[in-house]
Structures are given as structure tokens and as C-alpha cells.
Image (cartoon, rainbow, N blue to C red; front, side):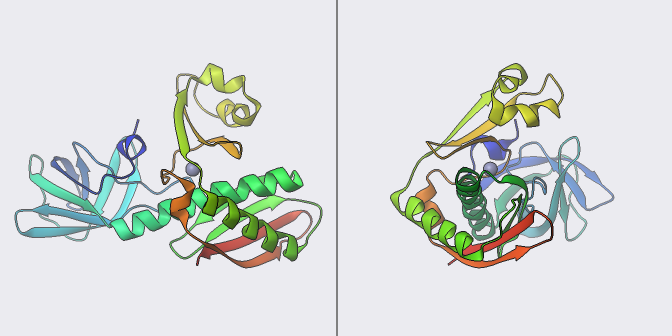
Length: 231
Ligand SMILES: [Zn+2]
């Protein structure tokens, strides 16, 4: 399991450089960087060796998380201090968790099928399939999300086996697309949402703060799209 999933609140840690490819692509013995994927942007941050700072401009998981730094100079075995750009990450954690709250409301209120979501530090986009198109309804869903967020609810995390996931309708679809030996991480907001997810979340939806509706778009046929941001 990747470290950022064990604890999404680690901001700084000490570790060693494991390997460096092409001068700028660094793997670490231990990392909490979220690599780009699953609709969530990669983390940014600093790898510090002595007084020298290397800015992490990109992170992506291959076999391990590869950190792209802005200049050459790091070497295998270097002892380093690593820190995340916490403002960026925490903002993304709040937005990502908000995507769960809003998706669940859309699903539960309209029976729409959620077909995708995309996060940027500025906004969240949720795509779904639904016959009707009523921007006012989406506005009211964001209002309702704000009521739930203000009330608060703890996020729960568990890991289930591939077999268990197949037995649960909410997880089965995703499990079918994954290798059988792979355990699945499940994220739950009590009485609201339960789904497989490898993103980073806040501990309680209260931490999200207030959401602001931006716009709803009709993308033809049954494709609908809603945008919102942190107020
Ligand atoms: Zn998630």
C-alpha cells in the first residue's frame, strides 16, 4: 500500500535517495507523494540535501513513485529531508473528498451514473450520465452538500480482498477490472458514500469547508457535467 494512503497528513519526513534516472527522476526509500492518477493531480514539494533544495515538479507511479526534480545533483544513498507543498495537497484533499460528497448526492438523488471526475487545484469537474438537464437542480445539490459538510461526518477506510469486493455491488464493477491478487481500498462516508478509491482524503468532511457551484453543462445526449470549487 502506498504511504500516502496509510497517512494522508504526513507533511515532512527523512529518507534516502534510492535511485536516480536521467539526473532528474528520483525514487526514495520512503515517500508520501501522491503520484498523478485517478483524476487527482500529483503532489509538489521539496527534496533537501544539506542546504541544497530540489523542487519536485511532477510525480508519477511506475513500479514505484518517480519524483521529477528541477535540477540534477541527487545521487543514490543521499540522505534527504522531504516536504510536501502542504497548501496544495491539503486543498486537493478537501476538493477530492468534496467530489465524493457531491457524486454521492447526484447518484442518490437522480440515479445518474457517474462517468468520471477531474480535479485541479482550482475546481472539480464531475461527469455523469442522466436524461434530464436542470442546472438549478445541480445548484441545489451543492447547497445540500454544504449542509452535510457543515454537519460533518468521519471518513472511514478499509482494505477488502478482491473476492469480498466482487460480492459488493458498489465495488464489483471496479474489482472486475483489477488483478485478482490485488486488495482494494474502500473509502466510506457513513450513510452517504462507499466506494473504492486510492486518492487522498480529509479525516472528516467538515474539513472541506464551503463549496461554491460554478456551472452545469449539457454535453449532448445524456452527458452532463457539473463544476464546483472551494468558496
Ligand atoms: Zn477518494
